[in-house]
Length: 142
Image 1 (tube, rainbow, N blue to C red):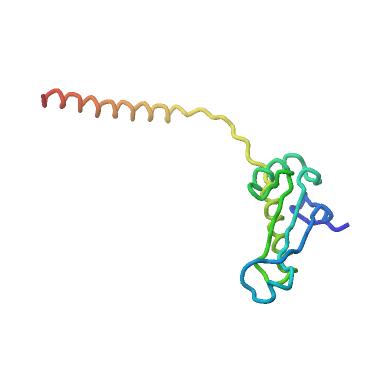
Image 2: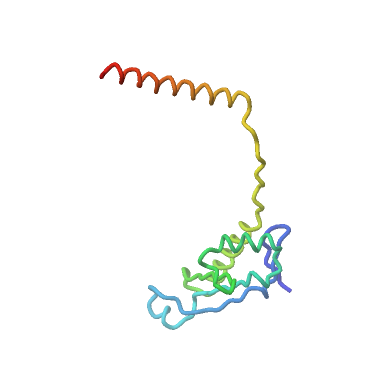
């Protein structure tokens, strides 16, 4: 049973990954017309062995690569060989999973300190003084 290592604590079974090789579009001459070098990697998030919080973050990160069935699709066609495209697609999957494995830090509500409050009030008074000065000069101009 081969494992694809994501982080030091997280790994997925390679049987959870479905790979299909398709013909690549674009330049490449006869090679592009004859050989199926592009890889389409599919990873079903719902039935995977990932923890639920990682699954939720992965769905959010996947964006338009996620199908309506909840399957993550990664396509790689930048190389001329199947092996290199396969490695590139797997590397993208691992990078995405590593990003999803990072727990966001919880925000702790804080209150402004005494000095910050005084600074804010001082700036408000100064601004009010500037504006009231404009009012005085506008009355004198009339």
